Image 1: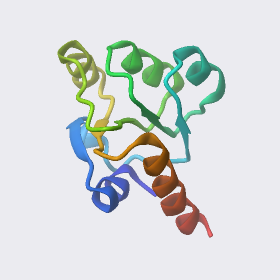
Image 2: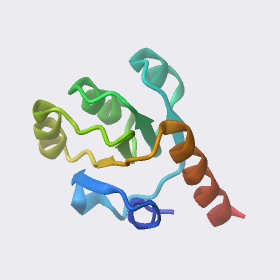
Image 3: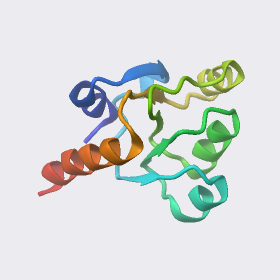
Image 4: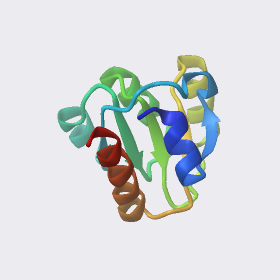
Length: 114
């Protein structure tokens, strides 16, 4: 499943990386502790977080994530958005809480791989 399918299915607001929406999602990771994300997420994951500071872009780039989804309607900080645009990292926003968004994405990905 690609980012574009997730964006459409969950009515996400794309803040950066519009040109990367055909990127395939291989899995996902939900978490706010950057060291945990660095240690346990994988390349191709969609990362779900409440963090909005620019370090999320660095972690997503380092781990080669498919993109970042901010929950609870959180908006990326200005410097975060600038860094994401410059680095080509997709950032999307959802009004849903992290628990619900994670479940919905898991259900979408599971259907696609069955």
